[in-house]
Length: 119
Image (cartoon, rainbow, N blue to C red; front, side):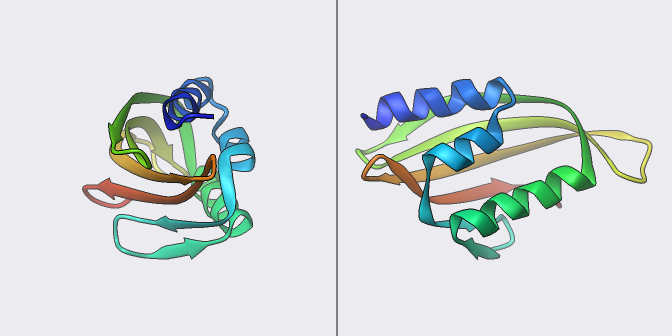
């Protein structure tokens, strides 16, 4: 599969709310995930668990993913917009971030997120 095809399918599935299907099918077993604060999580299982925890802390009202945008033969980026209410709070918040993904052998081996503030 070309990086273009993989990235387009990634965006399509995320826009359908299938983020965990993306992680299970497109992430390499040894993926490294880097958050905006520099914290790293390694391994497909721990990366999925990290996302499950985040989802459990937020009521997600909507997600929109724009892109993909390409950088050479191994990287693409997407722009996320989430509408969320943090559990225990009343105010709805818009969160925006950019995710940069590295692809090797048809699997995502690294994701790195860029955002302003706490996510």
